[in-house]
Length: 327
Image (cartoon, rainbow, N blue to C red; front, side, top):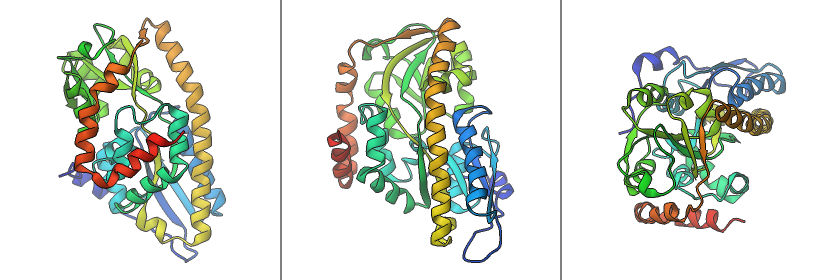
């Protein structure tokens, strides 16, 4: 069963006002895990501003950043059930809830970030959105989260054999655990907020994430080798509770969607700038960046992950093949 909602957190956010066809103003609450100044945080604040502007004040959004309303799994459940209206979520933890969203978590499913956006802005993205909406989460826009790579404290990673025996923190998703296991490592799912201390104390040997997350959390201080495996390219979404969205008039739906899309354009611009500056900063601080010469052995090791996934989810084979066929 998916992680149980923390009752006290849920109770604190349980007051919900949904907008229907009345003129009453709706006061929404939004969740975001990222810190002040992070591209997503800036973009979500812009979304709140645009939301009020485009709805003529009919909808206001109070954003809670830094995961102050609970962990990401808790917040996903809060948005699904209506305790919160809005969330900025990574699709990784949504995968166990909505099978279609899990497809983006297959290692090496995307060739690069532009390929990911071509998929999301087309038929593949609509298939993923429909699957999420059926579970209570309606994606309004897609945010860039870059490519995730491995980092650890004692050696560069060049081959799957370098991962063997390592305890690696992953997000709470069986696909990520399977990925590490197939590389010979020991997957250790844990909350993002716990990773710094776990790396520092040796509870885990390594983790995996993008440049801005690696830098902004200080993980580079306790894990000084960053190896560019780029094994996962997982988008983030601006998601809304399905009941709250469906209660809106068509005009209000358009206004909400447009506000989210404009925030996404800002986020993607800021992300590209932040990614470059984060890499520069950590490398100046002494981080050793390792360009993996041949990713082929890593990709080949993922064959059992794909086979197991498609055996368990045969209905999703068309989506997997559509993504792989997208140029």
